[in-house]
Length: 193
Image (cartoon, rainbow, N blue to C red; front, side, top):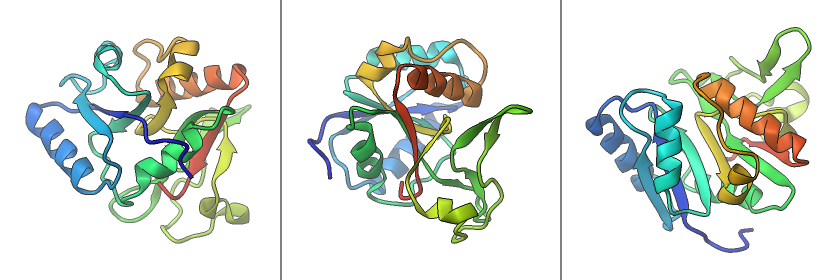
């Protein structure tokens, strides 16, 4: 359950034009039941760390959602689900399940791997699969969540210094999650957002 309904700033990343941003904004508004939100673009140059940082400075919310322009909202309560975890004092970042148009899992959290660095969990699994030990059906702690749909409180974002440099969306998100983890906070994947 939500403690309160704070302003959430949805920062749309990856848009290459005003029209692309507007379509994403319309889709988010039409498919979200959470009403206390603002939606703003992080520039129109694809994914650019400086533009994301500028959008964060302009954002008024107590919570940020970094949302890639290509992500389509499928669950009307997605913001409530993310916020339910992000409001916990022991949680840093929260991410939802992201699917390709064919229904296969694109992102369901990341694990640290000694051989490959970060490894996507359950990538390629079919929507409706339970996953290894039913992990696609439960909210859980992971090493990192995808930068394509990531919620973090303003306080925790500022606490660890925000996103780092131009290393691309996924590595920047992983770095943010690892910094939050070093600060003693959990990163949560929820299949319900």
